Image (tube, helix red, strand yellow):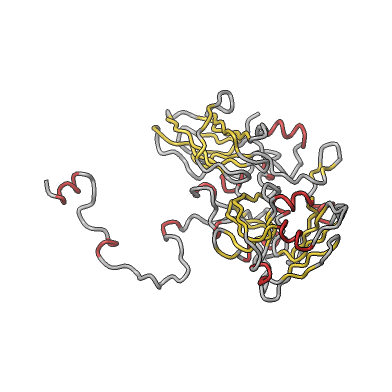
Length: 394
């Protein structure tokens, strides 16, 4: 059989497609590369009714369309309080002062001269999943868990900077402040800053983009995203937290008792199935692979369990290497769909033994009017049509 005949027998079209019939563009037509036009649907999206204006809103990472554990810079979610700042790096300064021996004002050139470090870490908005406290609200991985991204961050260790300035005896806290119009500031334990915090100027191999805090931002692996102060301009060392307007009004966790948790820094173990999902319906009965992501601000993911019957029975899913601390971890599980309805769930267990809770377990502690730290188990209902819906089960 000839090659052409074999191709026709195998279902390959007889005529050559257009892309093989002529030459394509050269290597200079796109000085900065772009995705294929056939991936134009893979974009960040926002929820129009979430905030009064986009300057104080968030867009969501399309987790359902990503591969690997690193989030492309162009798809990394953004959360702003007063719009995206456009900072001139030549004029920008990082001031370190307060309870230090040698206060400094550092230029970007000063930072580039210091030894660099790299951290692979996720950042997650504390309000990720916040719209789901009262019930299933939005239909999609992107909206239910898309205030999340993971990157390789490059910059200068905060420990290096504080060793350079010298920290005075009795110091316990650091105030980080941004240079945008909102001047967001947060109090951070000094121990955390000396552990794994980074003043980052690059993300996934390129300089930070404006929406990610160009020219520098704070990276706090495992801590809630609002503390990763963007457009960072000031670090003030002190002996107690400042209780700023952000910490006394916005980023506190109100409890049903009327009391509030003022500081809830760590993003607890969380996970979500990315396929099948509302954006990734099934196309007829047969073999599939359940795919998803897990993460924990406490360290490594130790195990992920998957259920297809709403949590009655669980199966341990293989984890896909690499499994890094405070980074996204992929899991997968082969599954044969018989065409009936199914309730897909996953739950993450991190290396501390913490188990991702159900929504009802969280409501007993937080109530139904909470905003932050909803890391409850997500449930997808697979209908007999193959369509997938966001639901909640007790």
